[in-house]
Each structure stands twice: as structure tokens, then as C-alpha cells.
Length: 188
Length: 214
Image 1 (cartoon, rainbow over the protein chains, first blue to last red):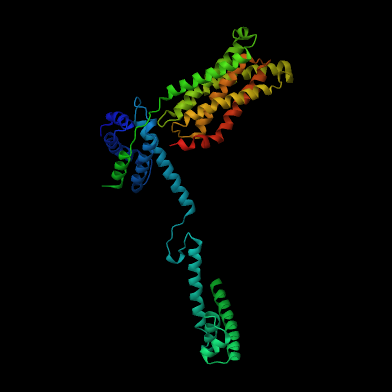
Image 2 (image 1 turned 90 degrees about the vertical axis):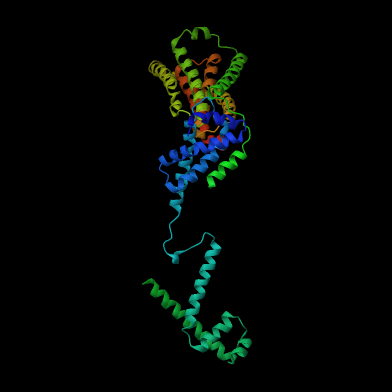
């Protein structure tokens, strides 16, 4: 690492010399890693911050005056990118909580959460229906879940329309009781 | 080839010749020359005050006036230093000494006048406020256009420093053709207007220089 040649290489890079620029960036990279490491950036993040520093150096390469020491210029940009990383990291920590239990998974998209909640609700209904007598369960499945008309449900089940009405009424009352009982159990 | 090697290859392939920014001293010199021309033309247009030669023999005028010019010089130099990475942070403190002298000499005169004359030492001079704000804004705009070509670390502070330089020069120019009767009035209307221009630039810094900040 011959840092004496860096101002000259950068000067040639400013003139559009791609080979000099490539050599310059390659040679300053280890120096940038050291500077970034000293700012307390975690080891596994140093390379990311170094890449961001290289991009910044590229964007402001016209601001380097070849008559001046180059290290303060490099250090200022590298430290700035490290500060930015820390700010982003702290901001993310304030708004995010690590998930340690799959049952608490949620999604950034509200629609995805709604679909997730839908499947949970469907599972609860299936569990509650299983607790009903067969006649009541069949009436609810045909009239409420498959949304058949009374005549269609009567034809499909072999029950009379009146019997289906009574069975549905009793099934909904039973489901209401089961639901309330589960709610009480969860509150305890 | 690691991702960083690929990035270096991509950046070096995309490298195009760039026009190197002149040193902060050269850029500060250019702006100072422009500011001196603008203020000089304005003084010439209004005509120098009749007692100018007498006033320049009076330390009570010369010391704060010279301090105001030095505030302009040091703040301009500091602003251009702050606009490039790697500049010495201590240079930001340069204008403090002349600012303290300016404030101190005017403050001393103000205290003496208030004890002798009471409230009579104070008077209204909105003309001073208008001149310093308008001239300071014009010079500050020129400064902002030059600072945008660089890459300031702290856009708000950098623009405020430039605004301080611009307003201090406007104040020094105004002193040459618009006499105020008391130091109290100079303190209130000149330093007050300079403070107004400087503080007004703070919230504009991000908008004016944010895109070029590194």
C-alpha cells in the first residue's frame, strides 16, 4: 500500500484514466476498511460501508485537490458513511423487534395479514363445527358455508325445509355458546 | 471476484473526466472579489458618507468596522473549507474572534451611550435592515451557487457560515455611506440584521446544498 502515489492516481482518475482509478480504489480499500472498523462498525458490516464509501468517493471525486493530503479526504467520507450506517441501524432497531416465535409472525403488507387472519378464523370455525351434532353441522355447511338455497339444501340433505331451518337456528345458537366459552377460556 | 472488486471494476469502467474543483482558498478569493465589487458599486451609487475620512481616524469606528470586514473574510474562508471533505473543523471557529471584537466594541459603546443618553441612544433604522437583508441575500445566493459545486458535510451550517460572510460585508458596506448616530443603533440594526440573515440561512441549508452533500 503506497499511499504516496494516491494523490497522483486520483489526479489521473479525475482526468478519466480508468486504470489509474481502478488501482487507486483497490489500494485505498484496505485503508478504508481500517478507518471504518475503528468507528465501531460490526465486522460483518465493514465491507458494506466500505462499498458505500467507494460510491461516495466516486460521486465527489471532483472535490479532491491533488495539492492536498488525500487521507483526511478519504477519512472524512468513510467516517460519514459509518455515521450514516449507524443512524440507519439505530433507526431500524427503534422500529423493529426480532421474531423468536413463528406463531407471532406477521407481514408488512396488511393484505397478507388479513389473509393470515382469515385462515386462522376458518380453522376455528372448522373446530367449532366438529363439536355440533351431525344434523346441525350439515345444515350450517350447506346453508351458510356453501350458501345453497333452502330447497337445494333440502334436496342435498334429504331433510325437509322446516327441519333445516330449525337445525340451522339451533346450530348458530350452539356456535355462539362455543365461541363465548372459548373467549372466556382465553381471557383467563 | 468479490462484490467489492466488481464494484471497483464497475466504477473504474464508468469513470469520466471531471473538472477539478479549485481549492477553497481560490474559491473564497473569487467570491470575495465578487462581494467587494457588489458592495463597492452600491457604495459608489449611494455616495460615501460626508464624514468618512473623520470616522476612519476614530478607533470607535475603525475597530468595529474592521472587525465586521474580518468576520466577512473569515466566514467566507470557513464556508468554502467546510464545503469539501477533509477540511479542518477548527476553521469553523475562525470568525469567532473578529465577531467577538465587533460585538465587544459595539457593546461597550452601547453601554456607555445607554448610561449617558438612556433610551435616546436607540432609534429606528429599517433601511439598514432592508439593505443588509437584500444585499446579504444576493451575496449569499452567489455563495450558495458556488458551494453547491462542492460536497459539504453539514449543509445547514455551511450555508449559515456563507450567509454570515455575506451579511457582514453588506453591513461593512452600509457603514460607508449610511451614518447611524449611535453605537447602540449599529449594534441593534447592523448586528441584528446580520444575525437574522445567518439564522434564516440555517433551515435553508439542506434544501440549497443537501443534494451535493456527501
